[in-house]
Length: 156
Ligand SMILES: [Zn+2]
Image (tube, rainbow, N blue to C red; front, side, top):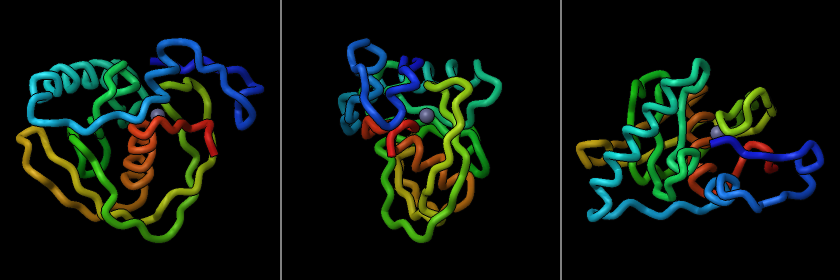
């Protein structure tokens, strides 16, 4: 789902009228037990979208029109990994990285992100996993978590 914006919007003002923009601006809700069949559909959709691109390494549910806290990562140790209700438990340090986003084709923006993260999520078997990550994995995880909170690459 591609966000439509004007050059003027970057850091200034937003037109939040289109459906796609509204979902991308939604704070997604936690996945509950009764959402599990929906999570299967979301996972299938995220895989189709992500692997249909040549450059994407991660995607969030609201980039595909779903307002649930689910992301798909495919980088580093997280090969084809669905993360349900992902959370940052602890963040340390800073790193600067030039980021892109599937919802903003062609756009690259330098962002400062935490260098090291302790994270927690439920995997597709609904078991909790905890990891300590850094580098690109940490950038990627923070970027996708921002999506689930309605925050985008063009925001400060
Ligand atoms: Zn993105």
